[in-house]
Length: 145
Image (cartoon, rainbow, N blue to C red; front, side):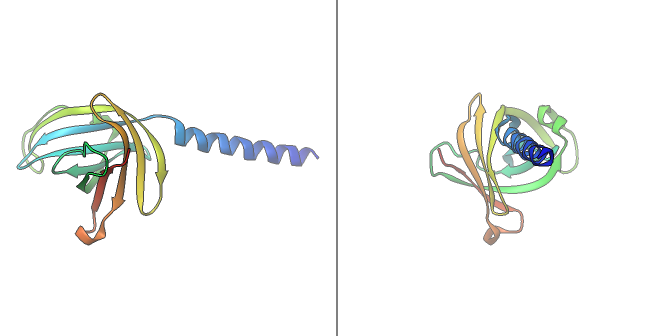
């Protein structure tokens, strides 16, 4: 009987941890990046790093709008606070924080990611869907709500 109660407790505790992970807010940032071409870097705090996408035309503003998002290398979470000049090399140019806030992870699987953003400018539900027709690191970024 004791083992049964201990097993129930472990299952309940595991569910609490999983739900906390899904419901606890994490950071996101959108950095306006004046490199060789203006684009926006969309970053989500996830798996201990800043998962990152370059979005050439900026974040979709209306429901159903789609934008190409190219996944780039993960960055340090500390980089999400960076504003300033990258002086030389790949990505050289001015970086400005365009928006930042917290997000909730609503869904994540092998096909995509769904998040609810609560920023200063950007609010709502967004979906990133892998888009292999456009390339290995290509995703579609859509506002869904």
